[in-house]
Image (cartoon, rainbow, N blue to C red; front, top):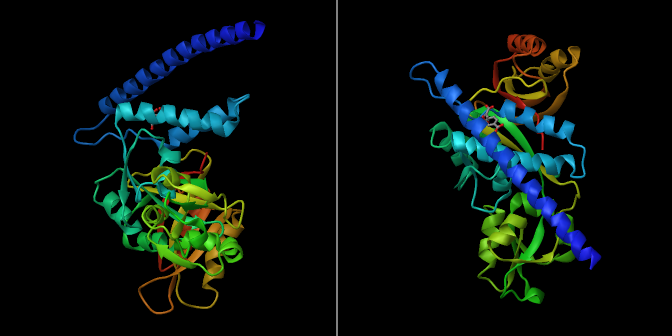
Length: 365
Ligand SMILES: C=C(O[C@@H]1C=C(C(=O)O)C=C[C@H]1O)C(=O)O
């Protein structure tokens, strides 16, 4: 049959292409090994080499996206290169990354999206533990959620920045799809309890009001924890994402139940290493101002006067006095850019305290 021959010919072509791709990937991996040797050689006595270079990785991914002509779309192509780089870096030095666990959480999905799958990922029981693990040097990086497009700031993360000296080295955005999950033994018409993380319950509030108005909603420490509980309870369901559903072998009673279709969470990569500019960066700072009228205005004027794009401002209690506040501000630019340096100096003159949490490449994926 003609089509059988056609199929065979195409498969032969694919086999040949795969061989070429294999050779090229191996060449690339050898290059990365050489890079590691060069990094070691250039090192002053006693200093530890820095193998992971987020600014370089962001440039590699951007370049791929700029050059991609399809038929795979940019994001898909970048995702493939993300994994190739991840494996190349693991040859130099496998990274250890802590995240808000247990296994199957969106934080783990964010860690994989940012670093690829060739890292050693370490689940932690709480956001603060992720910070502590990074501060202790037990892992290279941590991944923590910082804001959700439906529910706003993740206060635990903001407050942890007040307690730990951390450098923000990157950001990653993840589309969050929630599903209503049940186990093999669940009697789906007799559900009396729905478990999930408080954030996820809030992100599905309207859907729950419409479909399960009289069912108890129980907030637990994570979506993955919710999924785990449901396995052994015939009268409960969980709200969680795909990773947790697969990990705990649950089935979807309803898919994509988040109230807003664009529901996304932004995560930060925390570490101890400063990231050089890429030309397309963001900076996060914490500022505390004197408690007087017009303080917030004074803080914002230098940004406005210099045309700097503020992407986010969040207020938290300062924890050093009643009714005193700190501002978490994100803006476009790198703290080493002369213009940004100038603005930060001006703010510093008026502020009680100013701390640069880090400058990092804007999320590419
Ligand atoms: C190869 C390097 O080391 C690592 C691996 C990279 C890659 O595979 O392209 C890029 C940056 C680093 O995280 C490098 O610094 O260029």
